[in-house]
Image (cartoon, rainbow, N blue to C red; front, side, top):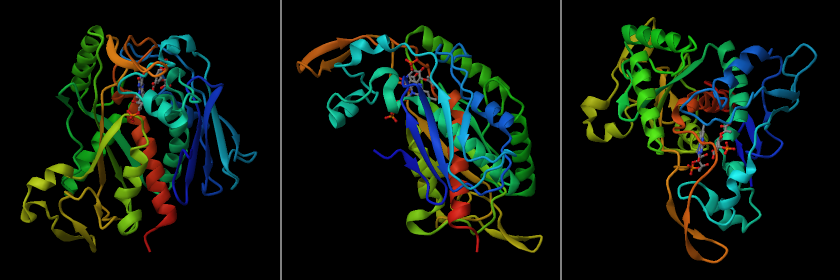
Length: 371
Ligand SMILES: Cc1cc2nc3c(=O)[nH]c(=O)nc-3n(C[C@H](O)[C@H](O)[C@H](O)COP(=O)(O)O)c2cc1C
Ligand SMILES: C=C(O[C@@H]1CC(C(=O)O)=C[C@@H](OP(=O)(O)O)[C@H]1O)C(=O)O
């Protein structure tokens, strides 16, 4: 079963939620990149579980340990980079009643259908959101490499419990809109607890999540991500376009059910005269004045901000009784989920979306650079 993404920059993730460790192997990183391990640990910590009342109480330090791929100066040395994150706080007996009775909405049934009982069930096994920890390690390093190329990636919770954050100022490509976008991205870098552009929206979201948690239910939401500083001409037509690469990678994040670029599905309701991004000359360069395309045409970057949104479904592990089937007896069964679960994935998933976008963009820059 391959759990690998990328072409020129390839990342394999390994491990299960309750195995000794989870980790990643990254191949194709440019040699000579000095990895700032403190910055990397801080990035990975933004996703780590156990510190917020709306999330899983499973507290894990999630300090990544790089075991291969760096030289004595801490630079990437050309060899595959491997990193592990230990699982230190597992409670596998919480999953005893799921060994034969699958949770609706999680991957328990499909794993059973594929592996007939050999699958590792506790904690969601290899399907766990925990596997996004190693993705943040690989993506955190990709972000550091992108920074050396002038590319910045930022995400925020765009919508949660029907509460909308201020959207990124990225559908317009005017100088004023670009300046506002830079301000929004800077503000999000201040370490705020809930990554929303408007802190009031974040507080309202937390209230709604806590109320839903009290009702033993869960929530989905939308994460919006932007990348700036990409040169026009990166990517590839048809099957290896920026949209293809990013969508494939982003759908690897557990719970992601939808991905849209630029205006996305809303473009289907516009006329061509409304949706086209007219060109103008700026500092001798041809630039789109608006950015309904989300920075991508024909799979290739336009030079405008790359804008993508991911829809997350609600967490499936709800704390109320549900109908299921005992796969051992093929009799109906009632199921009560135990375990320590998130009420929503979207807040913790913000750095994950940044990481995965960084990996896809770095992969495209290395595989299909602007010519
Ligand atoms: C950061 C993150 C945290 C998650 N936490 C949980 C959790 O605590 N409980 C749970 O049932 N699912 C959680 N999920 C979602 C499941 O991992 C996911 O629904 C499951 O693997 C099935 O995959 P699918 O929803 O993509 O089909 C989380 C996902 C992410 C990205
Ligand atoms: C540990 C993490 O999240 C886990 C993701 C998860 C799932 O089903 O996805 C189920 C829970 O596992 P457990 O029952 O072992 O606590 C979460 O805690 C993490 O994200 O690091």
